[in-house]
Image (cartoon, rainbow, N blue to C red; front, top):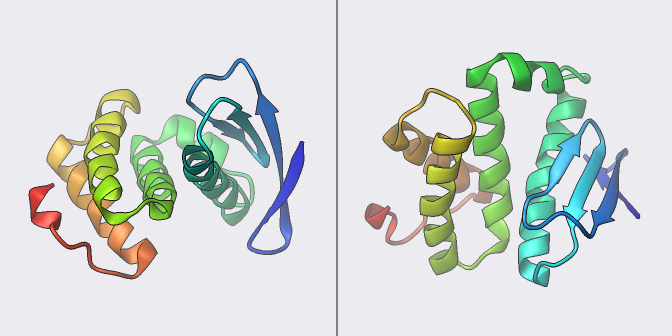
Length: 140
């Protein structure tokens, strides 16, 4: 068990759960993390999940409800979280992950957004979040 802080002051309780395979999970300020990941993949996933904790605090706790009832909110929440998560990767791996995560968001989060809408939004958020221009982005 670890305590991380988002926005420098708000706590997030991080629990390592051996039976989780490759997906993390956050509920309010509690983050469940799988234990059998490489250090880089663990860092990527933790950044993703801590972004959901930030969303929880930023919405005064309403993000959990919004996530369930609004496809548009869920889409934006995942775009932000995936963009933040891939920021720990080098550029070539990041580009591959953007392709993969675009498909994941489109197919698994019931957002009613197209692959191209999600790809464009995710790429834009990665550039905004990381404050840089990705070379070779035309291949996405």
